[in-house]
Length: 221
Image (cartoon, rainbow, N blue to C red):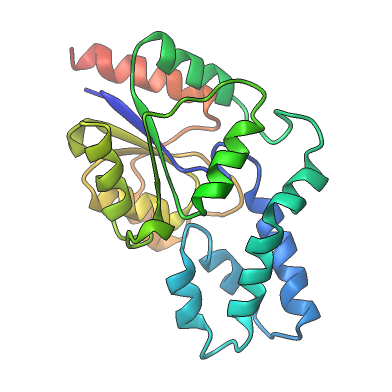
């Protein structure tokens, strides 16, 4: 039975992943850092520790990431001038469903806490997660399961009773390692063979998650 829901944020709740991929590509090109797109995609769902590992092979990538994080709010505001413009399909409906059914939910993100809170404030409606966990606070980044397990603990819910919503390979692997039910909602990546080994469910948007929760809980009263 699903007793709590855990959201990733970038690319899952808000259409910010494409901003990162396009913006970081430009930063690397401007700095003449020769890294192909696969390197950028490998960063999705990862934290700064992984960037540190890449610095040896791609000198300057740490500085490029620091610049992107410094400008992340400005980039968001330039691309999404109206509140709610960045919301992914079904976000409001799903949040309202969870609120109406008293299902707690949390956010587990590799973004800085200040960015998480800022994006939530620009949704155009109230989002009140019962837990927010950032990997920047010392949790190992995805694909390690720690950030999801920490969120479940804050939600006072057993891992096997949590549903994780993710758009990244690293997030799906982390959810599987946490022994949590999980749904992949496509955004910017195409699942490779490794990711497919961990995939359990796929929904086209957050809107479809409502039906999945209802059906699952109907089968497991």
